[in-house]
Length: 70
Length: 203
Image (cartoon, rainbow over all chains, first blue to last red; front, side):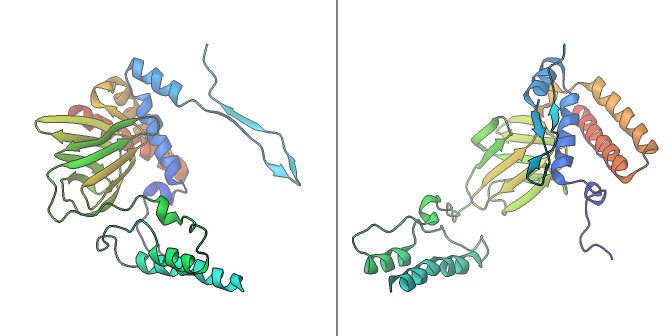
């Protein structure tokens, strides 16, 4: 079945816009000069834990954390 | 007895707003600040209590499109962590839309543009400020207000050329060796972003 609209290549590969946008932002942040680069990376650090719930009980959580280096 | 009356009154605003939603936004005049018909109907039934505030009361009305084209474009350029430009009056902005570099002048037709990684330049008199935008959207309204939202925007002089070259080489190599669709897409994104960074540095 042909698609009715031309989709961007990342959408055709199964990626959402948010994922695409975050990848672009990360690549740009990695190409910055030094003081700005570390500022940008500290600013965008995340720390969260995700757990799936099965039968009303939380399963083991997965923790996503950009812990400080050193 | 009153229940029927209130359901009828409450259903009225939705039909009024539905009629208002149908014309194009370019044809609609400045939106009213309160729903008159609802307030009157309420007062007829319950004169002692103030009419409840409808959502329309809390929304600031859409500013009317001026009949003559304004001389300046008002730009709001925001990032998730900072507001780069806030209601700044400029002569022109050039945004990197997916359809190409788009110049926005005062009086531009209302447009929503998705941005690709590229250079955005703000022209004010003889000053030009350039930012490299990673991706985002630009909303241009009929009254010469432009809202540009980006995830990352950096002045061009904060970009490190050696990292850009390295990234470009890496991703070009990944693109040729990618197997799954997702890997190909990621490598393609890498190549696009780094070549845009490259042309921003040289152009």
